[in-house]
Amino acid sequence: PFAALKDQPADGLLALIGMYRSDPRANKIDLGVGVYRNADGQTPVMAAVKIAEQRLLTEQTSKSYLGPEGDPVYVELLKPLAFGEALATSKRLIGVQTPGGTGALKLIAELLKLTGSRVFVGTPTWPNHGPIFKSAGVDVIEHPFFDKTTQTVRFDEMMAALMAARAGDAVLLHGCCHNPAGAEFTAAQWQVLGDFILERGLLPIIDLAYQGLGNGLEDDAKAMRALLAAVPNALIAYSCDKNFGLYRERVGAIYALAATESLTQRVLGNILVIARTHWSMPPDHGGAIVRTILQDAELTQIWKDELAETQGRLVELRMLLAAAHPRLAPMAAQTGMFSLLPLSPDQVTSLREDHGIYMAGSGRINIAGLTVENIPALAAALKPYL
Ligand code: PLP
Ligand code: TYF
Picture 1 (cartoon, rainbow, N blue to C red):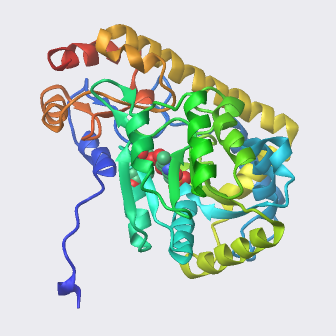
Picture 2 (picture 1 turned 30 degrees about the vertical axis):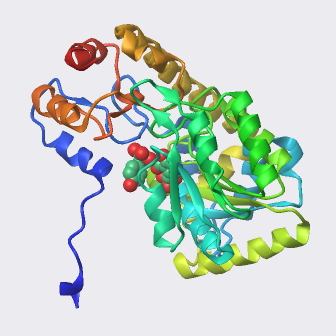
């Protein structure tokens, strides 16, 4: 039967890891896959995570099954962090643990299939977004979001495209630290968008995969919280994989906001049924680490301090990059781990082949791959193209 299968292309982003590794050049620069790296190029286990893991090792008494909802304490502890105290206690908001933000997106996609919603997705976006929804049989409608040549959000074009949305259709939004653009809506634009969503009866989906890596934990959640305060229904895909540095542990959660408590419970029931047919129950270890940290004020502080340091380093690197060339200046005001260089795919290939500089084919760079030392080399290599 396997002969019926088609050959499939490798994930372009993940393929960069192998290409970089096998490049013998000493001065190569890795700006590829979106993983935080410190000034030494390492992706360390965060200090609070190490302590929490040690505690789990000595104190955990069972590895017995939890259930399709995962660890409910983990899910509850994330609520005030992501949504603020006011919404955290609302009976209209439920959550379920998932294998990463990706697992949450998959549940959202399957849920949209059941509600018959289409999803509007801004371009460019994380390359997995479209395929995840399509894999559930959901129609994906793309609209403009960002122009990498001018480094501006195409807000008016986006709003014009959203006029085609019908009541019940979903709109996928990045809560903060847009991947790949690094650009955000202004507060005024969020307001216009929120009003439109409310008026048209659309369903916002917020992908919050980088809380704390843009302008800090509170600020990065501000736009989402304001939107959720205004709309009856919403779905949220949360990831702890970046802000707790837990990538391979696959730590996420889906949250759903519904108009009434009974509708919320109905959504929860459907989410659990879908989870059962996908992974039955989420892996525990990463969620247990996050729970252990958030249950302990001292560990929480250690984690927040390290996250703030991480965020501060990204801001500093953005400043240095922006100062290196006038066309890179907009990158100072952008946020999070990524920016999109105004390059063609051929130029990206040349940078890799001629200079050992690795980035996504779109021109997306991982800001955390920059260093004080490699920025001048990058700027010099980019100069003919800018
Ligand atoms: N959403 C966006 C925008 C991302 O960049 C990522 C990155 O991996 C994810 C979701 C998925 O996160 P996770 O690794 O937790 O599945
Ligand atoms: O965009 C990134 O680089 C991260 C990591 O299939 C990633 O979100 C990349 C590709 C992929 C899964 C995660």
